[in-house]
Length: 192
Image (cartoon, rainbow, N blue to C red; front, side):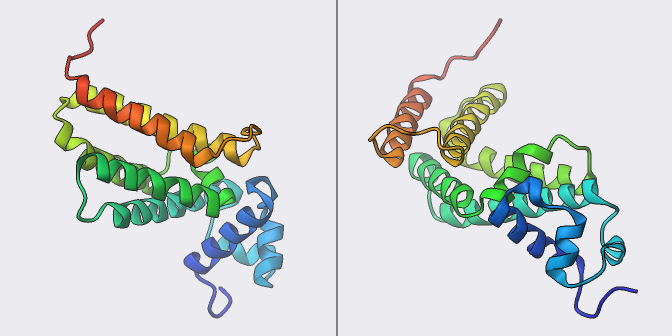
């Protein structure tokens, strides 16, 4: 029987806190049970083991990321929307390091909710790319590039990869401005 007040959402919030405090690898069923003050077997009322917990945590992460970035782009289009989305994305990665880690470490698993959440994120990127009129394939290439830029900055920053005496946010803005300049001039389809 599930502990009174313990539900899947509460479990995911606690799991995210563990991941943010100590890293995703520190998230175990035993650590989660200890944090929630329950016995480990009672967690199986809400998840089917550690892989299911991590997949659910990834879904939780993506949905929070979509909510955060969607809120940042409300009322904005074009370059302003992209810059706002990117700023919100990087702030999310900085403020939720363990949860963000779940986003890129676990999102290769097949999981119905995970596919739906990933599609929500893609749809958001597709909407902000519409004003550029790149065409379907080129838009997807641009989204891959933009996500790679964002993830590269987020990941390198999380792992202490920026040691120079140069502000990371200035580098982000410089690279994003160059990326946007490329969007404005790159209307040619890509062919082999």
